[in-house]
Length: 223
Image 1 (cartoon, helix red, strand yellow):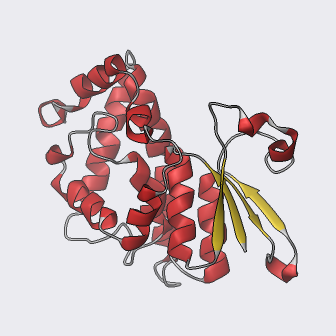
Image 2 (cartoon, rainbow, N blue to C red; image 1 turned 30 degrees about the horizontal axis):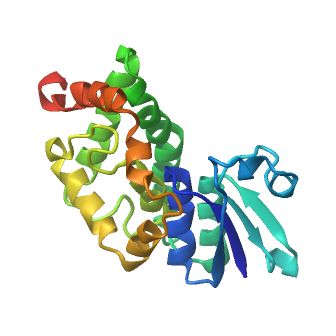
């Protein structure tokens, strides 16, 4: 049995989708960030960084109990445990490079974008979305098959969540819609401990306005 400790955030949603896609039995433990559940001694024993999500697998490798934190690590762990979403041996390098591109570039950049005021971050955000859009031309997924490379990135590339005008990136928009239609993703979205997840993801109205001011004119600013 998998025990997932999560809340209604992008990182929490990534883990929720991955455990649902894995097909393994699991149960959700809601870590209410507003109440400070992540700071309790019980949760700190699972994740000393006191962030969500975290995963406890009572039947890990060798039959030993394993504890993980970091949503990207959870995606890789469950992919390896089930043999799913890692791509074929020939395609696995593509899964790795796009998973890492998303984890080390896109996730950080789009999270910083609503804060505004940094031209380099704005330039990086546009460049990253454009690179993804060009790669997806004529492709269904980032690798040959649906993989963790898609799962890791999807929660951040939600239309309007951070001001992204995905109409400017039609291949990326079509990819987002394909993932959104998956039953496991729909389930992961329904499991929302925090009712105002979308609003919280988007930030304040002022932050949203700054992000839109950057990204609603991507095509004109691209070089």
